[in-house]
Length: 140
Image (cartoon, rainbow, N blue to C red; front, side, top):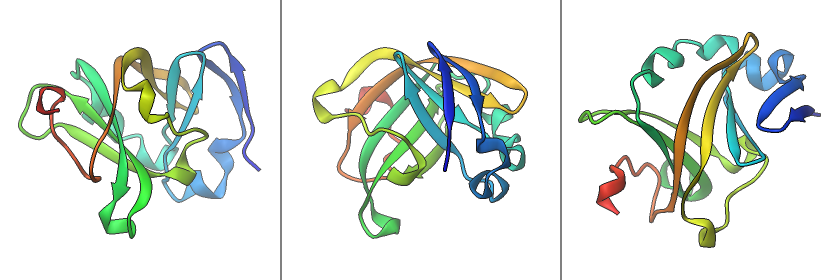
C-alpha cells in the first residue's frame, strides 16, 4: 500500500520510491494543499530535462482512447514550442481526480524524486473530450 506523508504542499515522506510501480517507471500524482505533486521514479528521471523551460503545466482530464476510454490525466508542460513535453496517467496513478467544476488555475504542479523537489510550475486544469489532447491552453 502506498503511503504519503504531507507537509503542506511538500512531500515529507513516501514509500513510493521502492514500490513495484516506481521500479516499473510509472509516475504517480498526489494532491495536497493546492499542489499536484508528480512523483518521478528513478527510471524516469530523464523526464525532468524535458520539463525545464515550461511556463506552466496544463492538467487535462478525459477518456484515454488508447486505454479503452479509461478516465485519465494528461500533464502538458507548456513551453511555447510545437511539441511540448507531456505525460499521460490513468486514474490509478493519482490519488484524486479533480472535479469538472474546478476548471481553471489556482494550484501548482511540482516534480519530486527520491532526492526531493526538482521543479515547480503554475497549474491549469481543464476537461477535454479525449486524451491525448496536447493542445495549448489557448486552444480551449
